Image 1 (tube, rainbow, N blue to C red):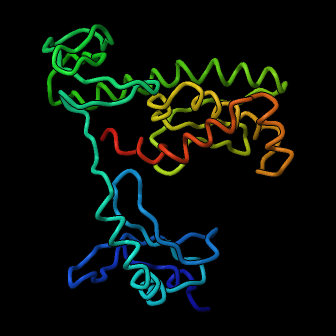
Image 2 (cartoon, one colour; image 1 turned 45 degrees about the vertical axis):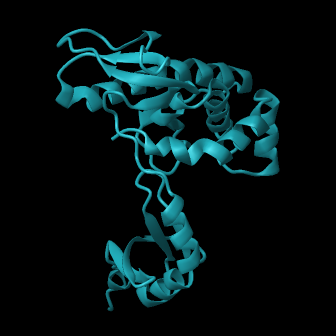
Length: 248
């Protein structure tokens, strides 16, 4: 019996040349993909080639090379990551804030006052500087849960369903998901978006407890409980990928 698994083996990346310069492209096989696709990964700003289950690396390389013009423009304009460091500016619930290391070794993270340099609301992060990013990320996850849990429960009450569990994760390609067992998972980066966006995603995933698909009936259910669905979807389409630039 032949080992079919070997046909699925792919390298982590491949290299093509654009204007004589080497460009590294990540490679991933997808059982759901029906065709070769090339996209930019929001969290890293790097290109990713998605190969369908019956595809092969050479055809994938040829496809990537055929998209050299598109890729050249994307690489030229893609914004860089924004790490969590003192002085960085990040959105919180859709409003710009500046991060400040408060210097104290103990205490809790607080949003208070206006920063004297930028005029923005400031998020003060105590503790050792080497733990700055981790502490802030943990705090943002707690803020996301504090906003998402009541929104989920409110929408669940409207639809008379009950989620099994709510988890906050560091998802790199989805804003939320609903498992067959009823667990709802959300990206912590939703706390960076305006409240109407977070609220809509809560309604969206709760609606999957009724309809585990994206059928017209599903969308009617979402729009019935979340009237700002179209506004939120438009915001995500325009600004959503930019949120993945923030953080570790």
